[in-house]
Image (cartoon, rainbow over all chains, first blue to last red; front, side):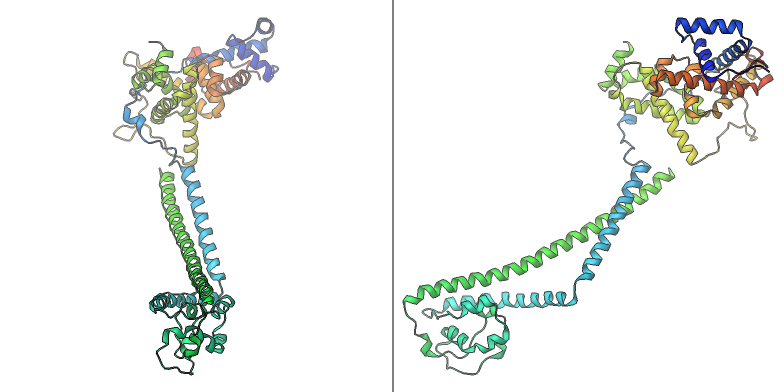
Length: 282
Length: 203
């Protein structure tokens, strides 16, 4: 049994066959082939193998492969390749699930009382908006009836409750008597009107029925201050009215964005899912 | 117009110049693809895709051997196609007669000028070679096809397969030994001048 050549020796023979050896290596391999039968057989068989492969029939091209403009100008398929579509589809599905679950948990985490408060506030707010403006106008229309309203400023700043407001009927009556100067006075408090929010009352929605004529006496030096405090109060109450609806508006916008995002991700997940399926089939 | 000029024009978007390169290399590209795949229809698809890809990527060709650069695209396309086939194995469509019998001499292999004996001999040789090539791993098959079947030199092949020259030499030697072992199995089916010695196969 003949000895076997090592891999390195076969590589040398193979390279010698292709005339890829340097002078020194070439001489060494040539002498080995002449002296060693194993080398000689191995070399002959390698030579025949190469010859067989070299004479492998060449295949005629079935047609020309020249390109037409429409072949190279068509959209690249890489974007819609299977791996890309699969990746996009997976990411869209995960994001959709996250947004959906996150939104659901956020809404679920809101206490019922908060939701109820928001709803009641909105109703009160709407009532204020609808009722407040005409009253301000009517007060402005009352010529020469600049009523003293010193008590109204602290009341507004302290955000007094409806019950407290009921206890201050006299003060309110004093402050708002100017609207009803000609009317007969009455000591009976109007509970319906007093149950309104302080802000609404400050804005002029609470119309007292009793207004003592003595309270109409106002010193001239106090008029400017009173006017100033009246302006401040109106500004303040207006600010409060603006801030709350703004918060509600922001919340609505966020809800809209979340809803839109959910829809967009859902649609993207479905489209890419279908495309992935079609790409895989192709 | 020489090859460098044609490449330059092709880079500027001249499709006619690129098509001249296509005509120059389509035989080589198709034959490499055929030997890689063993199927003329698949080879046709690979060749066409490779030329489209080459045109789109022509600006990435930075000089050197255009043939080697093109062969890299062809072999990569062949590799992708083989991977796809592995994922979704299909039955090869052999040419058949009206009676559903396999045609032993497909039209693309026939040569009108040769005798029937030569035709048979050539077909047997072709079949033996292709069977043995199909048994090789892709990296060995690519190198033996480019060097021994297509006659490309080592440096071009190294460029085409993006491997060092030493790797090409080593893989070629191993591929030749594997082919030798395989072809020995065909023995008498090979033409007498191509028959390997029964003794002296050493490893």
